[in-house]
Amino acid sequence: MILRPAEPRDAAQIAAIWNDVIETSAATFTTLHKTPEGLVADMAARGPAFQVAMNGDRVLGLATYSQFRGGPGYAHTMEHSIQLAPEARGRGVGRALMVALEHVARTEGVHSLWAGVSGENPGGVAFHQALGFSEIARLPEVGFKFGRWMDLILMQKIL
Image (cartoon, rainbow, N blue to C red; front, side, top):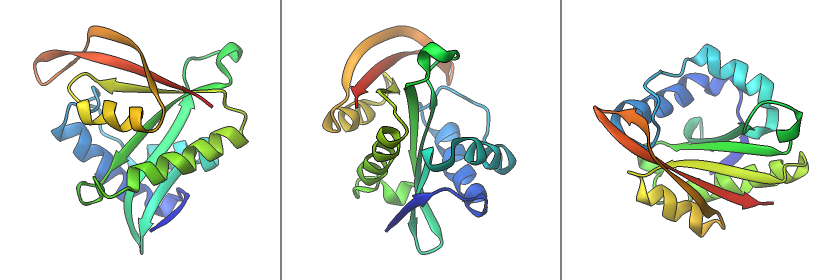
């Protein structure tokens, strides 16, 4: 497995992975699909803060972050996303991606890294706890997907 910054040639595979998560799980509340064009723009804006795990020319997963909230006061606080292809789950790919992303974050002067985890994703909570994230807040019924309200768990790691 190779970890590296995402490149435009990865966009279609990244979109396929992310859109599968959007369509089939409550791990994200969005119902809007990712497009290769939008992902290429995100890669250009985020640079090394958009990492992929590769097996040959196959994308196994991605991890990226962007500013937690707008404005200069939040310039050192980022919220990340991590998505894995089904065959990559439970194999250490997510952990490796997060280690690489945290390295980039520290290099870029990020102080606080946040995760917004669905209350219906206990595996996501356990994953983040194992990486040193702490649960800071549970926001009841703030997400709506699949015809039901879901909690959002905010988790933080001070870098």
